[in-house]
Image 1 (tube, rainbow, N blue to C red):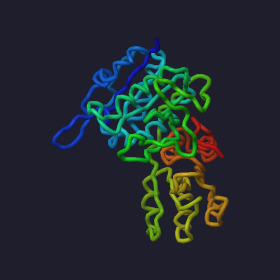
Image 2: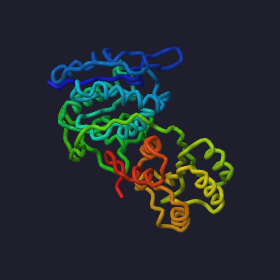
Image 3: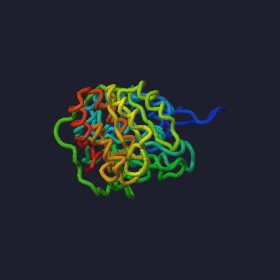
Image 4: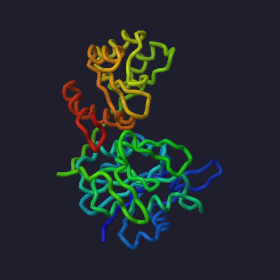
Length: 325
C-alpha cells in the first residue's frame, strides 16, 4: 500500500464559518477523517505546513513547501498539498520549477466549498488527489473536479463553480473517473529529482490599457529585476512607450512581453509593433505559457542567474509541459 504525505496549507477546503467570514480552521487529520475510503488504498500521514487563506500565500511559502517535500521525499511514494484555490495555480507552477524531474507525484488540490459542508466538492477532490498520488505517476499537477492538469498549465477560470480550473493551451494530463485514473499524456519526468531553493521575487507585472501613463514603466521598473508586460493580441508595444522600454532594458531589467489573451499565446513576429521591439530590445516572449508560469519561472530563473544569455536559455528550456513553441 502506497505511503502518502498529506500537507495542509489552509484554504477553503479547511475553512469554518466565523463572524467575519470563512477562515482556515481544520487540521489535515480532520480533513483526512472526511474521506474514510482512502484507508482502502493508501497509508496517509499528515503535516500542517501553513494555515492561511491562499490570498496570503507568497513566494516564501513556495520555498517552504519545496523544502518540506524534499525533507520527506525518501519516506513517501507521493504527496498531496491541500491549498486555497485563489493562488493554487501560482503555487503549482512555482513547485514545478523548484522541484524538477520528480519521479513521484506531487498533487495540489483544494475546494470551492469547505469540506464540512454537505454539498462540498472537497471530499471528492481530496479522494481523487490521494488516488492519483498512489499511481505510478510523476511531476507536479493539480487534481480538481476530476481533471488532472500539469502544474504549469492551470488557471482558475471560475470563481464559484466546481470546475474552477482549466488547462491553458495544453490538454489535461488525465482524468479521475469512478475511482480510476484515465491517462491522456504519458509521464515526462525522468532522472533524479532536482530541488532548488532560490527565487528572485523582484518580478512585477504591467498590464497595458489604452491611455496608460508612460511614467508607469519607470515607476514599476524601478521596483523590479524582471518585468512582465501584458500587451494586446499576439503582442506589441505602442509607439508611445518605446523610450520608456529602452530605458528599462538599459537599466538591466529583464523584460518579458506577453499577451493579455488567455488562449493560443503570443507571437511577436506577426505585427510590426511586436517584431520591432523583440529584435531591437531582445525581449523574452512566453509564447503559450500561462501568466502564472511566466511569473514563477521568471522568479526562478532570476534566482539562479542574472547573466542575459543564461536567463534566455533557462527561460526557454521547457519544464513540466510549460512551453511549446
